[in-house]
Each structure stands twice: as structure tokens, then as C-alpha cells.
Amino acid sequence: MVTTEICDRLVRSIGQLPDRNIALLAAALDVFGGLARFKSRATSPIIRTACDEMRNAATGTSESFVAGVLLGVLSVRREQQRAVDVVWSGPTSSVRTSRLTSAAVVELIDQAVFDVLLMSYVMHDEPALASALQRAARRGVTITLVHERPADNPSFHGPAVAFGQVPARRLRWPLDRRPSAASLHAKVLAVDRNVALVGSANVTNSAVVRNLECGVIVRDPAIVADIAEHVEELVRAGDLVREP
Image (cartoon, rainbow, N blue to C red; front, side):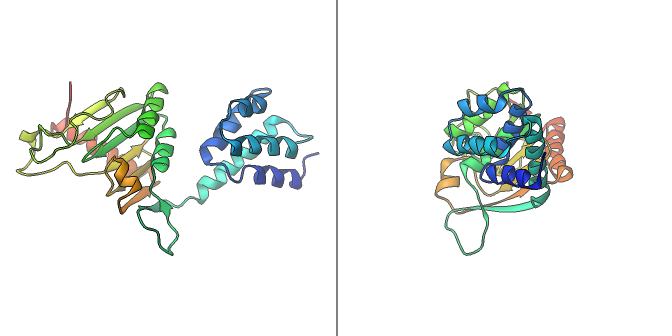
């Protein structure tokens, strides 16, 4: 017989796991014996411990029931997330805020199902981010990269190509389509027209490790869709053009 105590124990067992791991666990539980296989492939000791605690907590129930509890937890977490969240890198203060880190950016990209728009003044081939983009591409996610280029901005001295190993649609703002001395200076990550990170940080290791940077995560599909559609309008107008 399923009791409130069993549900409470299951909820506690996944309390330290991020949303993505909970979603993967729930999917694994839809397959007979999925929990054991999931644990055997897990590299994190936290995840393996959570699997053991779940197995103990779920005694007398089915894996499909456990999957339902996990999906319920995930739904509640997402409802509790604020529509707007401020993120910082650099020095901390007494004000509790989310941290702008490489892991946070990678987590957003790992959630992508349909499309990723990444726009920045400068992009460096940060390894963790490159791997996340490659994983997204393998899932069939459409990736659009937009960044500054020396050919379009004589004062720009960054790399002309970013994430060269990632299959992506690459857009540029041509020199003959911009005002004198103008820069492509927007910093945006938009995922599935559902969530976006907009801020001051370039796509560089310095931005999320050393610099004092601020950004805002927006979880409003209407606003994020407008961000993505603005870029598409610029493409249709010829202000942004696709590199061959």
C-alpha cells in the first residue's frame, strides 16, 4: 500500500539532484529495470546514492509509481521557479543570487529540444560549452551562432570562427549593413523559445570565472519568442546574413 511516508522518502532521496537528472531518472524508470541500468552508468556518486535511496524508499511500489513521483517533483520545482532570475559572476555579497557559471549555461543548453540561439560579441571555444553544443546537435537541435568578426568590425580582434566543430547556422552583421563604428554587442542565449539568458557576459571563460558580470534568466515563452523572432526578422531583412 502506497503511503505518504513512502512519497516523502522518495522526494527526500532526490532532493540534491538537478532537474535534468530527475527527468532522466523518470525516463529510465519507464523501462523495466531502468533504475539499475541508470545507476550502473552514472558517474556521479550523488546520483548513485540517490538511486540506492530511491530503491529503499520505493519498497512495495512499482518503478512506474516512482517515475510518477519524480515527474510530480519536477513539475512543482518548475512552477516554483521565478519567471525572472538574476545571475552574477565575480565577488559575492550578502544578497542571495544565482551564480553565472559555465555549468549554468551548459545546463540551459542541455535542456534544448528544438533550437539554441547563442549571440555574443566574442566567443571562445570553451570546452564544456562546446561539448554541450555538440550534444545538442546530436539530438537534432538547430543551433544558431551570431558573433562579431574582424572582417565586419576593424576594431574587433577576437576569433573569426567560434566552435568550428559544431554544426550550426552562423550569422554575421556585415560591415556594409551597419552604421560607422557599430559593434555586434548583444549577449543572448535563447533555448527553445522558452528560456533565455540575457546579460553582460561574453562567451568566454573569463566572463564566468573572473569577471564581474550580471545577467537575467527569463522564463517567459512570449518574451523569449520575441527575442528569437527579432533575429529572424533581421535575417529576412538582410541585416544579418548567413556565412557560407
